[in-house]
Image (cartoon, rainbow, N blue to C red; front, side):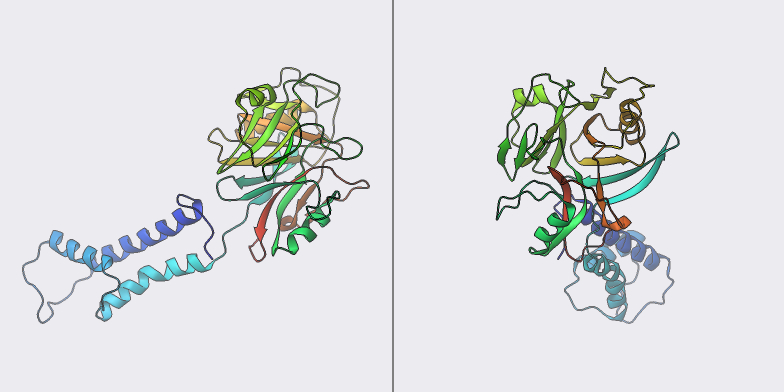
Amino acid sequence: MLRGRPGSPSLRRIWCILLRGIKACLHAAAQRPTAPRAGAIQGLTPDNRRDIWHDKVRRFTVAAPPRGRALRSAILAPLLVALAAPAAAASCRAIEVEGAGYTLCEADAARDDIRLFLNDPGSDTLLGSFANVERLLENQGQRLAFAMNGGMYHPDRRPVGLHVEAGRKIAPLVTRAGPGNFGMLPNGVFCLREDRADVIESREFAREAPACRFATQSGPMLVIDGALHPRFIEDSESRFIRNGVGTSADGRRAWFLISDAPVNFHRFARVFRDHIGARQALYLDGKVSRLHAPGLNRSDQGLLPLGPILGVVVDEGVPLD
């Protein structure tokens, strides 16, 4: 089944293939010298011929002579191939920035199914691992395209800040300053709404109160309106494996980043701002950061269970890049 919405990349790609096929066939027909056929209309101008070809293209359902059938096949073949191919899933890839390695995963908020996972909805017990999320999805004929730890949590794995799943608030928003990275204001919320994803500073989030289908609060913000967090120090010695999420200004793109080696906040945030181009980005965690990316044959393991898990869900059979 074709997956996509009007205006989605998958549908746009199909229409582009169709239009390119029509254009190529019209051009080939115009260039091909042919002798007049019996019953052919004589004295046609190039514009008349072009109009006739356009009319033929529009009337695919009308029986066509062999030449018309060839035209129809040439146009429809690439379109049918595109329709038969499963939609490509959100993907991950290795990147290098300023000599340091990272893994960057990208998702289209209007097309991809981005979710948060904390507890098993059936038993209300902690999921805590990528494997448990995969087992949950397997029962629904689905799987993870990729996933990572999705926000900070208490020792009992309860979220430290706001946590919303399928429109249900599980933990409240926290706007006050506090200890640790979470309380280093400004912090923020990763909010998923219909067709868009946004990183929003927490106090702005409290004022606007957007209706998020899924949301996770963490801190600190890495990038705020294109600027790095004011408390980051360029040559800081505090280095950890870190992961975070950034969003595009139009809310269409979400970027999920994890470092391959320990980095400080300033360097990690610069990847979002200078390499990816995110104007808003949020720190998810450090030291405990993990990535599950089946397309890269990678699934990080840990000694202790995770709290919130953030991932992109696809149907079984969708190819993973």
